[in-house]
Length: 363
Figure 1 (cartoon, rainbow, N blue to C red):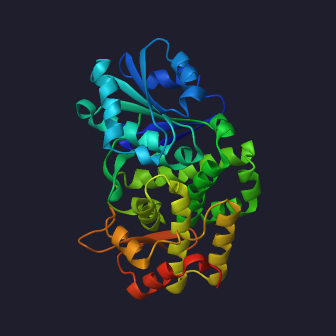
Figure 2 (tube, one colour):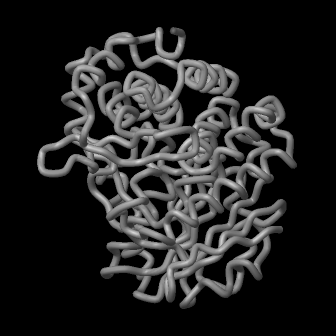
Figure 3 (cartoon, rainbow, N blue to C red):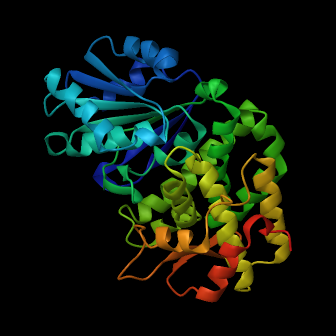
């Protein structure tokens, strides 16, 4: 097991990464404040891992709520099921919520923890690659609105993150690909050496080589932890973690949440962002083609939905958390491994990128 720390002063917390961690009682107990635990999971994960986690917490009053699986259910109606369980089982202000699942479960459980009785503790136990490398770390929680992704939420840091890499053995290949988008993102935004390593090891990663995946998870978490420690609530540099997300969120909202996986939309969004950077003279055509090839090797789409028009993109992108005073802000690349946030985007070049369709990165 390896342990990293998200350094946030008195809100600092560990990330445990390793095999066979789900049943390790001693990892949970230092981070549980009272005697009550509510495990929040979904109908896919529960049959696989709920019993093991519940058994590890035998000393506590353990209740569980099993939610429907999928991004389509990341909404206020489903969130209420968590509150219902907390109230029906009389959980008090010292309760600890435990998110057992992927990014959707982590985001909803975290938001429930942030808002129940004005804030209770929670633990992240991510079971997908995407959640292990990204969404479980950093304290972003929330739910979707039909008009925009993650527009309702709060910053609420977990007490710890327990990433058991054994859970990836049951992960469908499409979900593995979706998680790989976020792994690639870290290389693009702040870690060019890691980006080179990913390119060299993409076949091992996609075949679920344990050593390769463990290294990718640890390096991704380390990169994210360093960014979050500098800017916990995204008032500055933390926004670079959203590379490709403004494009990707537009795809998700337009298509209907769940039709495209988050990582799939982000993968296409990163290629769109990189294409815009090429048009602005910041990265080369060869670097853009190399990114397209890497995304393809990771099983990710390299073009947005055929039925999305430029107007569809623009209207959806205007309903984004990074829009400030009516100005669209995007995360772009000065170079591979060097991301920045800007509202000075030439509109004509953005339109050209949005019109490129499946030709992105082929020039």
